[in-house]
Length: 113
Image 1 (tube, one colour):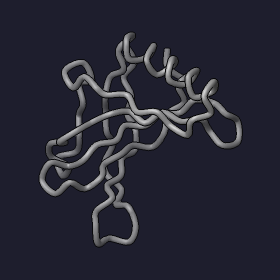
Image 2: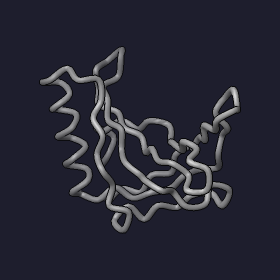
Image 3: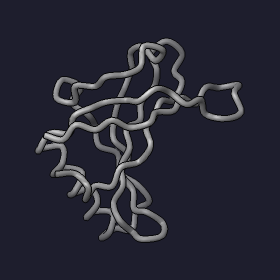
Image 4: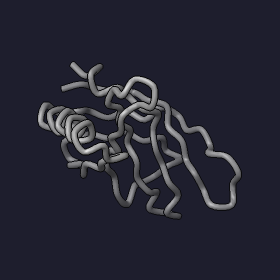
């Protein structure tokens, strides 16, 4: 299982630019890793712009900054990089208190152990 610590962002309505968050930490299980790899391959075959993978919150062991609170939903967005077509993913969800979009910087799928 890989543990990732990634920069996070919050995109609130009425604010011009996303607000940086403290680091977001989560675990990628072996099953989730295979799902990310399969999504990357599917995107290569279908040329679709992105694919979303639902997240098992119990397996994810998500640690959010206190300022975020609880998320109402959580999933991974997988896409191919524009320059090198390598699979990338990032965590996306919505803050339960105000539905603001919360997301992380992207991570390369092939960098997972």
